[in-house]
Amino acid sequence: MAQYHGPVCRFCRRENQKLFLKGERCLTDRCSFERRAYAPGQHGQKRSKLSEFGQQLREKQKVRRVYGLTEKSMRIQFDRAATKRGVTSDIFFRNLEQRLDNVVYRMGFARSRSEARQLVRHNHIIVNGSRVNMPGANVDVGDLVSVKENSRKLGMFPLAADLFSKRAPTPWVEVDHKSFSGKVVSLPTRDDIHLNVKERMIVELYNK
Image 1 (cartoon, rainbow, N blue to C red):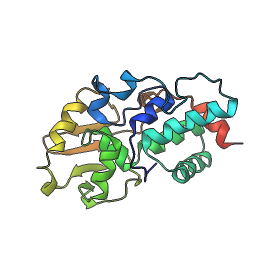
Image 2: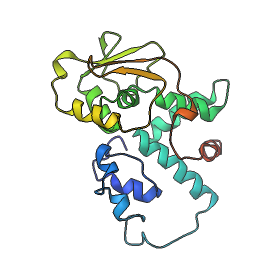
Image 3: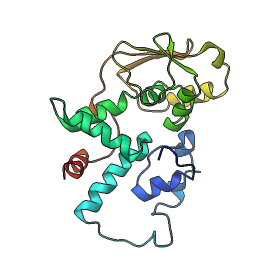
């Protein structure tokens, strides 16, 4: 998906739920899912019963599309989580949340994760005083994330801050939009991630 350049609203329709991939548009009546709440394509309105594998695949695809990962990146993240002590699914989602592009989005510097990835890749984001242009870079507790001073005049930031005020709070980060900076104050937990997905099915799929 990282190299997908087509319409993303079809992903919400395919997964039969809002994935909030288009920022503010997802909150308005222009949202494609609100107007056509059925799968895209010629046979989208036909109902079909999914197999067990099909249900697992759909849950995995939801996560891929929300975080904008390729299948290879998704697999790497899962394998890393599986090697650590603890609940694999909790560690897996925590690692996804700690990606730099997601942290930039959670802090309200971007309206969507795809926009956050673009900010990171175009060298607009600074972590602990150093420029970082890798969207998948890990952001740990205590790290300070800020917008490069020369980039703060971009018109997207006030729009992103306004949308941030309408979203569910992110308790594991502290943000000051006036100074264009934020800090990770704790590790994210599964309860902090408002994502309607059955993580057990993803674990079962990758463990096959």
